[in-house]
Length: 470
Image (cartoon, one colour):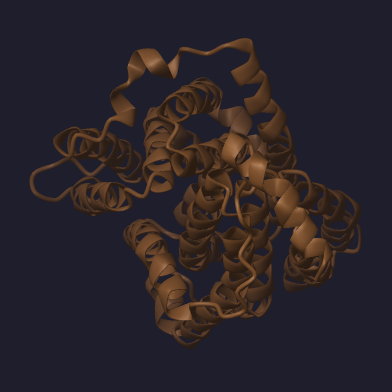
């Protein structure tokens, strides 16, 4: 029988150290990626606002793909981290194989759409013909990058869940450097290369994706990391394993897919505003990545620290760590937001925004940063619930509020009332405070701890009894 610790003292120093070991490399990796995107936007800015808007809308299609496969990442990390805590190698191999297969299916579907139906994709996101034409050129090249990007994401999720944070970080450094160098060479035609414009930016992204995947594989092989190369074990599935995987993943999948579709609907509304607003939105999405990049560090810390302890049967330790992740997340995101608002003028002007588009972009950043602290706390709580085995509560909340509150508000403001663009944009965050309160109550209850390992399940009765007594 596993004992449940009731020790009142919490070792904050050790906790912060444990979070930093996981969160800092992930945050740095995402910061690198976002910095690369910012440099991309600055280089593309020389081609004009219309080009910036086109690439920004293509990025929304990529974000939709992200939503379609991210459910498998979240579900996979639930299993990876808990099996890692239980030291179950077969469980890790098996769940990685299922995760990889599902993710690559999504990647090839989106690559097919980008390569063979780019005009249909662009017509969905905007009614501006000039933006559509440029976006089609971009998608016909960048579609080749999608399977590589998703493959790298699957490998990175496994590496992070098993506490190998540095390999994805080093791969990102190589990828971002490659992307920046090739953008410089191919967009305007330097170092003897032809000036390819927007197609050059897409080609640079595709080649950088190749570098990212190759570096991950090479470093994992050099460090003798086993799980990526157990290819036969990856596909040694049985009906019980597949059933358990999809039972846990189904709520996460529905969450990500339905939220992705909801965000697509929001982007369709935003994509039918003035060209200046579309360009400002494209730049804003790049800067938003800075905040999300730091959040991703806490998300991975939640998945590993909480999931690992739940899988090993240390449920009280998982509970105490989970409760303290949110204030850490809030403090960090608040600091990032303050810096972003303070530096908005040089950042926005360097990425081609001026006049009306600058005013819109500046106001978007202020609105977003006011909402981002609460939004990121909601997200990290949801990821904490998922890693502990509860994939339903946060999912239901997010979907219900998206479709019953956010989408109606955005649609009415943007398409019926023709409200100012910033009012439409602010409606995207109208649900965050309500969800924050509801998720706080669920966090305190401890009912989100639902182990998938034998060790965790054996410790569950004692944990629930101790929670009920408090």
